[in-house]
Each structure stands twice: as C-alpha cells, then as structure tokens.
Length: 404
Image 1 (cartoon, helix red, strand yellow):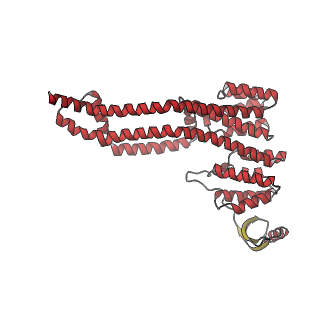
Image 2: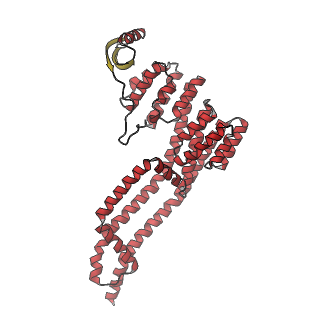
Image 3: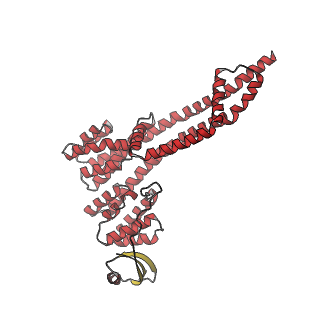
C-alpha cells in the first residue's frame, strides 16, 4: 500500500514523499528506524507512472536529461553513497514531471527489494532498451558505477552521430523547401498576371510559355482543392508511417536512396555494433546482447534482417556467420568481427567497427553535401530561369514586332 507522507528530517526540513508499506503502523516503525518523524500519512493509489502521448504510447525521457541523471548517479555511487540514498538525493533536486514520477516509482521498487535494472525495466518504453540490460550487467559484476559511465559514453557517441546526420541534412532540406516555395510563389502570384497581357498583345505563345501559364492557371483555379488534398495526403502519410508496415517500407527505401542511403545504412550498423560492445564489455552473454542490440537498432528493415540470424547463434553458429547471413552488414565489418571472435576481444573489435563506421559516415556526409549544395543551387536557378524565360520570350517577341 502506498502513503503520501509529510516527513520531518533530522536537519529540521519537512519534505513530502511517497512510501510503500503494509499499513500505517508498519510505515511508522520503518520511519522511526530511519530517524524520520511522520507528521501525516495519507493512503493513495498507484502513482501515474508514464505520461501518455496524444497518439498513444509513452513519452521518452529527453536524452540530455537522461545523460545528466546517469552522470550524477555514477558520481554519487563513486562517492560511496548507497543506491537508495543516491536516488533520494536526486529526487529531492528533481523538478516535477514524468521523469520524477518514474524515478519515484523506481525508488519504491528498489526499497521493496527489486533490483535497479528490474525497476527501470518496468518503464522500458521511456528509456533506451539497452539501459536495463546495462544495469543488470553492472549489478552482476558489482561495478554499477563503471557500467553507468560506459553507458553514458555510449549514449553520447550515438547521440553525437545522430546529430551529425541530422545537421548535415538540414541545409539540403531547407534549400529544397525554399525552392518549392519560390516556384509556387512565382506560379501563383506572378505568372497568372501575364495572361491578360499576352491576350492583349495577341501573340502566338511558344510551347514553354503555354506550359508555364497553363500550370500556373491550374494551380490558381484549383488552389483550395490542391491544398486540401495535400493536407489530407500528408496526414494519411504520417499515420501510415507510424504503422509497422509503413515503417518497414520507409526504412527499406531510406537505405536505398542514392547518396543518403549508405549514410543511414552505416549508422544503423554502427548502432548495432556499439550497443553490442557496451553489453559484452559489461559481461552480458553474446546471445542476449545480440538480441537486445538488434531491438535497439532504429532502422526497422535492418532490424528485421538481423533478428532471424539469432537462431544461428543460438544453435552454436559463429557470430560473424550470422552477421554475414543477414545480408545487411558490410563485408569489412564482418571480417573485423571474425578477427575479434578469433582473438577473444569481440567487444573491443565491435567498438573499433562502430568508430570506423562513424568516420565513414562523416566522410560520406561531407561528400554528399559537397555534391548536393551546388546541384540544388543549379537546379533552383534552372527552374526559375525557365519560368522567367517563358514569361519574357513572348514579351520580347511582341516588342520586336512592334519595332518593325
């Protein structure tokens, strides 16, 4: 049973906490042993553990906040504080919100005898799936603080790699958006105004001018219908993208896109290798590590190709053969994993593979941007140039006839 308590601390402060006990007498006895004075205890129901999003599911804890939490927890454990006391200190300083509710429930579970990994596993949708497994490894080895620091390093590397990919794609996306916006502006606001002018001049329009003017007039005449259709199509696409089938189709298409596909493919394999290295270095068995790491891969298509190979590892096959059989892991990465298996340093070799892939991703991004930027500028100039030519050619033709 849960109680909402107002407690007096030995230093004179009064705090409100949620405590778990069989009844109020048991609660008072427990608090007396801890040297706390109970002012008030109100029975309450189970706390709300996660905040649902409008579309369903559980809201993820922001990565920066989660990183700070793990860094602080590792520092408190290194200073020699017991786990429960470390959680209490962090709860006192934490602002109200979803993460505080979850952490409060984690503390209650730990206080009642659950391991920290099991307590966080109860909220697996709010955290990276790798996290409870990493905590389990730290609890088994007795090196929870070192495992937390290793996980922080892993999360920083993955986050930095993701930021590099997203940052590199922002400029081309903005350029494409501006190009589309400028073409629509010219087609809707500028080109139609020349229709009456061309009729008054009574000149034969060239094919390019007819196409440009026809397209512009079509947009203007059907603007409402086109806008509604586009909005409905976007909403339908976003909903379809959230389905399992939609994610699979899109993730498969992503890694086949020229230039961008190899970058996203390499990032997915880098995620797999870094997750595996983190779990293996913590003492988690290969099969369990492989299964958890496959689930941690963001690309659904790559994950679906990797999961069936678990059977091969489970039946005693070599790990590098399973990766090779999946058909989504690069031959160079498979060869490096094979060397790691042979030398007994698989976790170290997987870290090297992920570092190598991260460097390759950065190089490919630079090449892609070096090619895309001038290409997009040339394409934008060409489209706008064609629109302007379609407008001014009839005008110049009419002026030349008038001069004659």
